[in-house]
Image 1 (cartoon, rainbow, N blue to C red):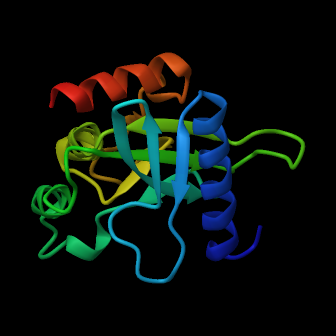
Image 2: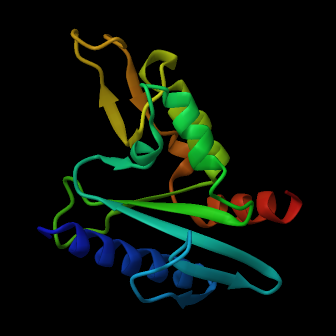
Length: 169
């Protein structure tokens, strides 16, 4: 995959396949002007809007367009306001994955991602959700490591947890 379009297209296909593998019905949106989500996943009366984000470099840029005056937390808050409680992010990572392997996939709510982004870079906040990032000696967060929780890994159990959160929320 060379272009961002190819990464996005592959990520969406893998995400749809994984939800279907877990027994969910999938509706895929097509077109240039999509709202906040790419897929709709349905299991009985449970409905989720799935925003799929693909990456081939180890991180997902999420809040860059909202940042003003280096206010990372403000950018994250503005980003959070764009998402409804039924939105779930499916993060698909191709970095270090060969064509004979499945990409790593994670599920997280906007609130979980927002909290992670605010805690990143030793609490300064960040616009990029890194799968794993070691801050260099020149960075404000020197010596710290930001890594998304292993509990976000896309499993049937995680999918059930997220579905329950959305049903309650």
